[in-house]
Image (cartoon, rainbow, N blue to C red; front, side, top):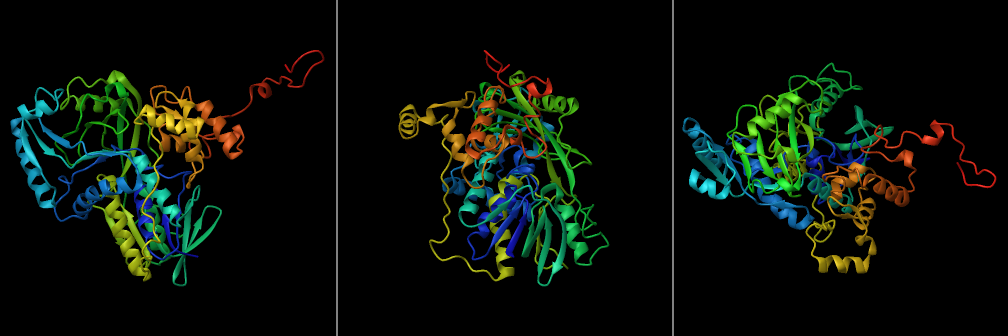
Length: 509
């Protein structure tokens, strides 16, 4: 029995878990994947939005602006990477200039500080590679960029350090009322909780439907997820991206937006905190909640639209492409609150852009609602530790500091990932943190290993050896991203029926 079960270990779920750890209550996080940050939270634009786009008065507007403010504060406490590079919304014709004024007024109504419209001369000084057609831009200095992996992992580690339990490979498949609590069919067992937070991303409507059925509010069977009734319908909206090498990282130094449309903020061009350049996304509504494949058409659209605001984008420097799904719903606002007719179930759904930016504010809001429902009190002073030690980043570490690290642990001098300068010591560190990194992707999210130009071609076998040694795993058990993505599928000698027994007068053949 827990006080709270959170379904989903994305950035919203982990933020809520971290904030609930401030209260005197027991909390667990249930995640269908093998690690945190495996859904929308890992495949997005990695932008800290200033807050000028959302409609004034909406929950999205309020939480965006507050989340922006908290993001920079939390980065200091939790040691994740965030850079206040600022953002520019570029207008490429005089006919569309009124759109900039509209965004300016909307941002001012939302409480975004220091917004102003700049003309082409100033814009060109800030961004020499801006499009020749650009006439003006909205400048938002509070915009920024963030490491979405580092943010989510930091929240999870801090939550775990303060008593939150994480259960991975644990899919919620059913729910029933159990007195004044809820019993969840989760993984191979059951979890009972007085309150449940539905932070399941693109699957939030399925979880929502389960609780409605278990409450007798719909005729959906309470043992299998299905399309939710009209109260909540999530449409997966796919966005495709290019990620360019660090050699292209300075092509622009601010986040460059197009004027937004009904389908979103358009294709952006932005530096990343890792020194890359990201270009995208598209915005295509799809049926499948697993449709994360890229397409030739989608990537061509990204290439074409990015050139409208930034010239000579060096797409030949691409090191990978990827796609993510946003949890869109028709009203285009966050759905947060206790579900009527299902006491104790709190939806945290339809968290699309600017959901990453809003995550800290979402954590504060939802944890407050749940704590009020439970009657839980804040822990006494000193009982909650808001800090989390960061993972060493050798890319920004001076040689003198690196030498000191090597004196303490020589494994800092053994570079495993050459592209991103990740050492053996960093990989060992994240393997033994809580939650653990037990797959190649989990290590990638925490250290950056395999994220460089070779995309793991050099370092993958070396990382596998470290996982074997540190966790006692066999090569067959090591995965890229959990069950079903095993790296080793067989042994050549077994497949070829070659004996490995020593022969007389020689070695094994």
